[in-house]
Image (cartoon, rainbow, N blue to C red):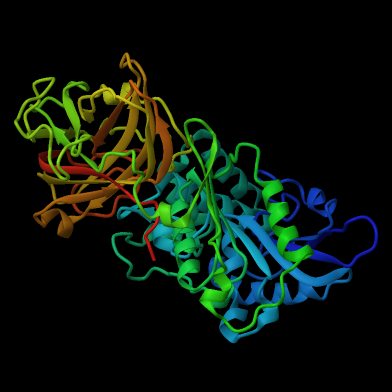
Length: 548
């Protein structure tokens, strides 16, 4: 079932389509202007309940149903009364992926593909872009979303008691402990529960959705947020579109999944006017050189610190910022977990230094920290380190974490005050040797900026990795990838890397016995001691995207 908004006056008009599972009346107005606004600017707007949601008939099957339904919807939209035959699509999250799942591309049905599309905050890999990272489920996020879909199922069945039970659990925060049981009762065949029951350590049994190259070569506006969990999916889509010969536009704001800081509607309107109201000549056979044109579409990035926007050439995005150090080493005399100011983060390539040299190689240290060194973290499941802010929590974005860094189960490594402003663009990646006294353990990393007086610690980016029995037993460096970022750290401030063995409830607490974590701490959870071997440890800043 669909709802339509018509412009005033006489058509024909181009059509904008959004397909979503939350009830068409909402129309994603949490992040977009109301459809009537787009209609007032000359577009016939269609918001459609996907099959089995809202007022649409049938059974809801999650993403698996959308390719065939999406193709049928685009063909239908072209023939609507008042349509000029040109169709664009928009929407974020589930509504973003519905734009890309289109069986018409596989069948060579050109009319089933939108003429342009603007998917936001989504990706094609259900494991890596929707359900987990680093081998661990997105616990609070995954449960919360699965329960939202389950509640809509209760509403459609007339199960008011089930709807209220789910709603109370979400409102009171109890869902992180009882959410699996609620899903078993109210949505046992749901997509969300299926993800949470599946091991995220490897790709076996997980779906990576195909997308037609012809669709990736259509005009494409990709939208992401630095504090959104689907950002890696957006970057993957940009990479795929470039590889298919497309010329995608990319916009990344200092946004979370639901807070876009005033929205992107005017930019979307300009994009749709450019490609639907004044369309370029119809494309011929796929030709990557012809499609891309003289200059690649720029990348627009918002600085998370200043909120200013920057345009970046795609080639520049594939290289680390010139002003940033190539990497940092970690040092401690063994007290980095008990004193948040003892561990050190030292640049590996100071100005004028030989590339790859370590200015601290002589073993000197401002706070007595040894070159390299060893630090032990003891994870007590009775009081697991909380996860806060970042891209995986219910309170996303930069947050204050000075109190967390003062805990004795968080190891901190802090740089000297910066001599000049430092522009950080890309993804931080940590490599270090870690061993544990239990078959399984987690490693959670947070990058922060510390104020000049040391009183404020503002978290900028986080990342995590889970090492199960097989991975934990392997000797060699461990790797943790942090969420991509673009931010300016002012001169006089310090950088800090904080390491912990938990981030509850962003990720489920690891029992330590090798079983798949499925909630908070229980009586069978084990104390886990992690030994961080700092010799050779390396924190690097890697490009935002890979060069083609």
